[in-house]
Each structure stands twice: as C-alpha cells, then as structure tokens.
Image: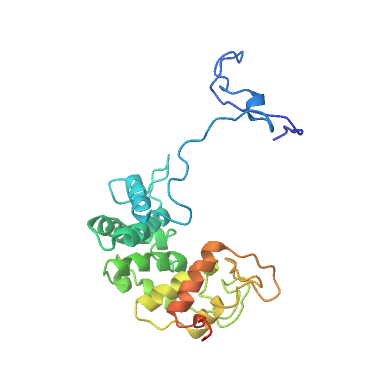
Length: 260
C-alpha cells in the first residue's frame, strides 16, 4: 500500500513464486514489454467469445450448474456452509435457460429444506428477512411450489404483512411504502414481483415507492433515497424495477412512430 508509482514505472508483484534471491520465478516479460509505448505484454486468456450485446444464457447456466456441490448448492471456496443467496441466483439462471427441469427442482428442493438458514439465520422464531423471502419466493413459484408454504414458511406473508406507513428512523422504514427492513430498491422490486406472481395485489404505496428512486438522467438507484438526496443510477436495479413496474401495470405505454 505504501508503493508510490511514477509515470513510466512498471511493477510486477509475484507472491511465493521466487527463491529467496529472486533469481527464479520472475515474470517472463520485461518492464519494457508492458511500458506504454513499448512492446506487447502477455495476452490474457479466457476473453469474451460471443458477439457484443449477446449472452449465451444456456452456457452461463451450465457454468453455474458446474459450480454446484452435489448438484444442489453453492458453497464458497473454503467455506463449510452453503451460500443460499448465490444458490438462489443459480436457480434463477437455470429457470431462465431451461425452464422447469430436474436440475432446477434439485436446487429449489435444497433451498426448501434450508429455508430457515436463509430467511431467519438468527433463529427460526425470528421474523423472516423480507429480502431473502422475496428471493426464495420467485424460484418457488417457478417450480410450481407454494410460496405460502415453502419449507414450512409463508414467504408471501413476510412480504405483504408489514408495509411502512411513513418514514420511521431506526425501524426499517425510510419512507411510506417501504416493506419494513428492506434495505435496497432492487429488494423492494423483487418483493413486489413475488407478490404479483403469487396472485397478490401489492400495497399501492409499495409500488409507488419504486417510482421515487429514479434519477434525473433516467437511471434508477439501488438505494431507497429520499427526495433531494444524491442519486446514482445502477444498471441492474434500473432494469429490474422497469420490468417490475411494467408487470404491475405502472409503466407508461411504449412510444409509437408518428403516422405518415
């Protein structure tokens, strides 16, 4: 952290790859090879293979499926417990690529068995976390399971039962319409989507809240801001909230070309 580079300097840091004198394990390229105006440095491998603007969804899902332990869960390197959030995200990818499948059923079955580990990590008697409940409700619905009885938990009740009547500092409410203890705008959007897919009508204020976090440049921030606060758009949140508002019937009609 104390190393201060000047224009033209080149550093190559090698950890554990040299002998004590530094005579072996040095990089195969010289500083001149990579210095601006010098030669061409090493070519990275594993670069993009698809055309710009295109994603191989099936390939992405297959890559994620290969990361599953026992075909059912994601476990971080060096960890002894599953990462339920990433396991849920993998279920999304499998659903997007293949729809209902044995692979998806196996992952969602694992999540159903460990629902309390995700929605109530501090104890089964605690109120379920709404962000986790919303994430789990979506793959439950995708596999025709009942999100009102997913692993013994009513995920929909966790989303519909506690909408903030106003901003209440310190009580998980930044504004009217927040689902209590939701901390990000994309979590609120996911909760609204889960309610809609379960056949519920979300609280009008909860849907309104999604329209209050758009920046002047059109982007939508992931932070549930108040009027006048700094607003920085986030690509993922912008796309998700736009889709959810469309599903909720709140998106404006698509513009049409003028008649000629």
